[in-house]
Image 1 (cartoon, one colour):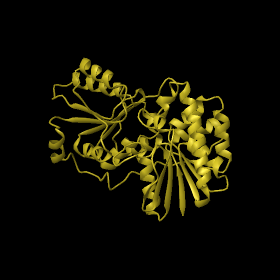
Image 2 (cartoon, helix red, strand yellow):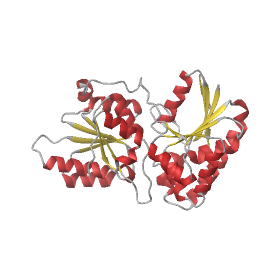
Image 3 (cartoon, one colour):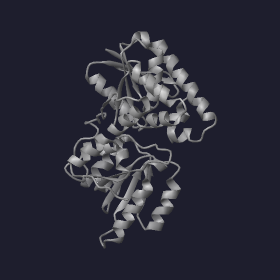
Image 4 (cartoon, helix red, strand yellow):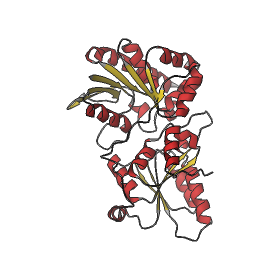
Length: 343
């Protein structure tokens, strides 16, 4: 089959983390014998790589890369007009290509799922919800109506966590869809038997290392990570572990100040290519996934970095609002006895 795949973010170059789990899904479709045409935000000419063609839709780069759409939309104003324009452009591009497709898969119900429904109502369609899209439907005035449309128009809905599915069910007024956590690339994140000494030397890890991965934005809850580490350090006379957070964002300077005030050694390498994230996961002693639910109700679905850590086999600790990590991830962690709730 030839799939059309609609998404907001998709890797723009080798090692780009933006939309990397969608790229993993494309690889699954290829392994199953399909070909895929991706429509995603960005600029540039179409790129053909074997059975994958990536077409970029202008106008969405500032929304879906960098800080991310949820954080950008919080600013309000003209950015909402840009979001509407991109949604219309995505639907128009899908309508123009749909004759060549046998089925459509969408990532993020809004705007990709709605764009697929509008562009090709006769084609088989599957749409994945990843968290920010459900939170958006919960907040906008006509969100319930849009949720009901998606639930009733023949789109096969998939949710990366049970919590997301339950929240969507409350919006549309009936249970709908199934829970399906997307798989992580086994070739990029092979299981380890313990911290890799050679990688520790190369990365300069000379003390026990606590690793986190994620944009430096409030929803990630990195302040809770630092506070929890400070409490552990105060209760032991063991050598201080170093906290390493891979990622960047507007919280950087505040986290540096907090770490200094708490006496927690902190290293912020910034954004690193995905293959290097795998190296850090193979070298560190502990992976921590902090997460919080924001005052507007938005929470994370199933963070890709947590699933990558689980694939590698590094011990995983969840700090903060564990429910926000998604039921599928929480259950996986619990089965491995690797979950801790910390304040």
